[in-house]
Length: 373
Length: 98
Image (tube, rainbow over all chains, first blue to last red):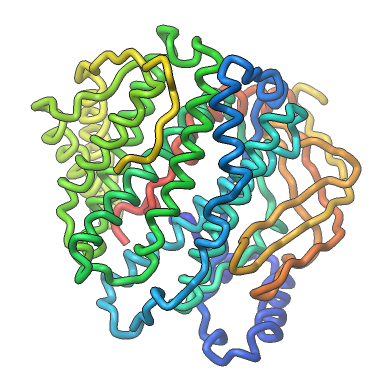
């Protein structure tokens, strides 16, 4: 999991300070004393900032200015506020399995928004290219806003996030800019597809809406959508990024890795999906379908998610992953062998997914899309 | 920067933590213009910078930057890409079971 409770902090003075401050700050609110302390652990990255600075958006200038103008006008500024639609939630009475998975959902989402905020802000700060800096400033703003909104929902549930991670040692890893484009583009678009699919489903089946946060998903995912649009435009400024032979391979690898990871993780959260009243396989295929359709705007290929081998292989991958987890928990030599065998089966399934021929695509002349689902 | 040796330097920095409903964020800025490179490690000195809910806290601190050796930097550049899944958001943590 992405989080650690404060008790793993080794610096004792840090721990004492947290406690002292927490007592001081929360003493006015008795319920806060019971808050479970969750240390956010975002990752830190660097990239080739010179390459980022060298981006020239003049080939997509018209679309760029329009998109940035829209981001500047900040249409969602007033959206992330709690109003009468925010129903009270009985956290105490929630089924413990659902509560565990839903909190994992909230904490992971908060960490992801938070990491995005840190990454985008760093890119804005290190860059000198005006277009690029402006874009990253807007995206950082949106992510910090989303994180704040989720944080509030977490506080209601008795979980307080701890931002003390800055005083822990952090190692900076490195991504080439193109990896950031592929990964964040896909992440933003898949995020849109996930949120809008849940939103539309709950619109039709409101009795399954077990928490009010889902009511905010529509405008929320429009932010994700426009962030994805910005990365689509960035990729258009350099055709090599999506057209060269080795980059096509990277894109296929990315799509396969991201889709299969999503499948495995969603299947490991049965209570969450059952409460929403969605069949996980249906939901994931629906998200893949939307993401594939959207990503035709920029990617030269799409995965064949209707191929006869697609779903059976994903099921095998998922089974291997959960067997591996069980074996690891068993421990001992039998556990180790079981884990190794499961890893091998998982790797074989992944390779099998990679060998499913992809469907070629010629991205349209006009790259821009509007949210349509 | 040596091939195998790490250099340690300190830099004054500004830590800004926003713990508000409208914005949850935390950033470190080096006041002397120091720049972090692949593989470097950064640690801000002192107790965690904690902002009470609803507030923004700005503090001036000192940070230690452990510069990666040339070899480590190269290694981080070559292998960092493979951690790309970190950049992807899946709504759930990587635990297979909770």
